[in-house]
Length: 227
Ligand SMILES: *Cc1c(COP(=O)(O)O)cnc(C)c1O
Image 1 (cartoon, rainbow, N blue to C red):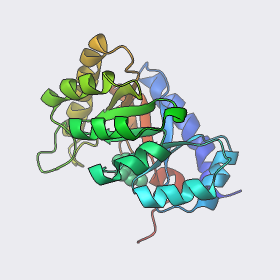
Image 2: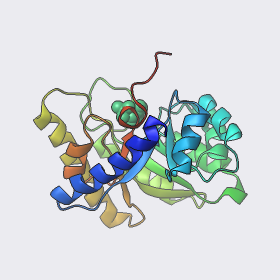
Image 3: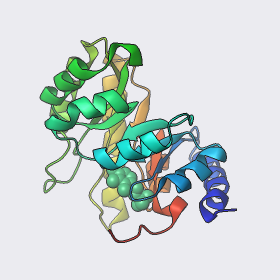
Image 4: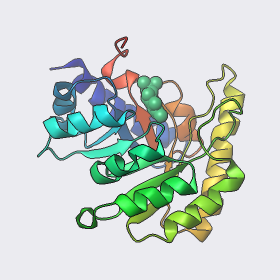
């Protein structure tokens, strides 16, 4: 049995325990498969893992072509340039990295009519002033509003990648602030059901602050090979 398949069962059990300890529902697991080849994805998919996250558009599309016919839900979690909006709207099921209105409009325009609504998360830059990606917390509402006006898009929630801080309290605050923003926006946009935060190193912390989806690469597949 491939290591990743063994780790999948352990990780699923761990997520349930971790959530229970914080009195929260178990989060959804997104398997982050960037740099991993199609055979590794197939093995996990056969073991019951349905959702996969990719960072790079071309890499993802070539895997989708190889894996056509599998029951896989594809999430884009990497930064998205506007000139790739058509490829992304055509091929992906979810986009987690929406951080500007221009991108919302491009995705809406290019979503094929026969594919159903494209699920979107608004990426919020909650704490990392140095990062160019993610909107400010103050801008999130206007982007949600823009998404909600398009029938070809479904507003599902928020995503964050807090700065990797050694200080646990700093990271906890970032996750906590994201959950507050999520709860606040959800009152106005009831279709929001997903708060994507937490990776291999900080999933437990994110879960304890109310993450509903963790994005895990290394803890499933092992260390990424150098590119
Ligand atoms: C690579 C990546 C992950 C997974 O990171 P790991 O530390 O390998 O679990 C999660 N989210 C995003 C946005 C990523 O780019």
